Length: 435
Image (cartoon, rainbow, N blue to C red):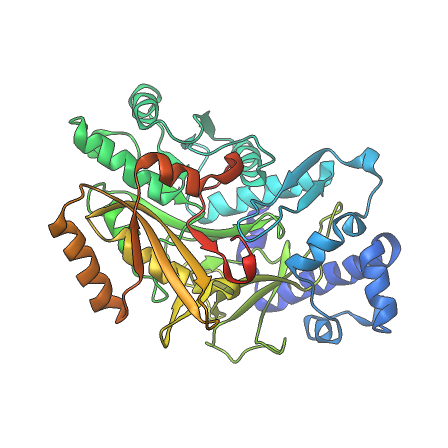
C-alpha cells in the first residue's frame, strides 16, 4: 500500500467505483475465509457474489459488539501463524474484544493514520509528541506511530500522564504537534499555570485530539475545546475511531466534520430498525471494513450516533464526513423524564470550574427507571462550591442528580478499575452491566 494524494480528492463517482470493487473483494474473501460470516450467509440464504454495491448491504444482517464478544475467534480469517499483532478494545462498555492483525493490516493502519495526519494539515516537517500509551494491546498508539513514520515526520514517545515530563520534553525537543486526550491537555495547561509556564511560548501549534469530543454538533468548540483554546492558542483537530473499524475519521483545516477514508471503509448510518436514516438525521454508525485481512467486519454497528454530511467540503474533498458523536446507544439516560446522552453530560461537567474531574454512574432504582450518581473530584470543596455545583446542574439539566464527592485516590480507582489503560467516565450498572 503506497499513500497517494490523488485519492484524497476523488470524485463521488470515483469513490463509488473504488468502494464497490473493494466490497466485491471483501465478500469473496469472507465467503472463503470467515467462519462467522460463512454461517451468516448460510443462515440468511445470501450469496456473497450478490453483494456488489453499498445498497446491497441491506440484504445482510448487522453485526454488533455482542457478536464479537460471543464469537471472537470465528471472525478470524487467517491462520494464527500469520498474525503479527494482537490488539484489544478498551472494554469501556463490556468485556474487551481481541482484534488480530496481519502484516498487511499493520500497513493498512499506517496508511490510515498517514491519511488522517495529512487531512489535518500535518507534514514531514512536523515533530509529533505522542502523549498516549503504545503498550497494553492499544491499537491506536501503534497506528499513530506507524502513520507518523509513513508521513516522514519526527516523533517523540512520551506516553500518557506526568505533566512535568511533558513540558520538559516540549521545551527540550520542540514538538509542533501533540497527539493526546483533550482532557489531559487541560491538565497540562493547569500544570503550566501552577508553575509559571507560558504555553504560548512553546513550539506546539497543533493538537490531534483523540478519545473525547471537543466540538458540538454545529462544529463549534464545546466546553472542553474552549478550555484549551482560551489558555493556549492551539489548532485543535478532532478525530473519531475505534479498534474494530481500524480506521479514523479526522477533521481537515475546515473543521467541519471528520472525513471518511473511502478506500478503507464503507459507512452506513442506520435507524433502530437497521434502515438508512434520512439525510441530516442522526443514525448509528455502521461500518464495513475494506482491505482488512485478519478480522474484517461486515455491517458492524459501533453503537455511536452521528450525523453524516455528503456535500463537498470547503477543503475540496468530496468524501462523506461525520459529525461529533452525539451519544452512544448504550449511554442514553432517561432521567426523571429528561433524555441525556453521556457526551452532553461530560461536556457540562468539563465546563465547571469547581470540578477537576468526574465519573458518571447510572443505575436502576426500585421501580426500574434510571438514576444518576455523579462522582465528583472538586477543585476545592466548600459549602459554597457545593451550592454552585448543584444549582448549575439543576439549571442546565432541569433535574438534579445525586452527588458524591471523592478524593484523587477514589477517582483513580473508579476511572481505572483493574488497571485499565483508558479512563472510564461512565459506569452503567443498569441490569448489572459495567460500562
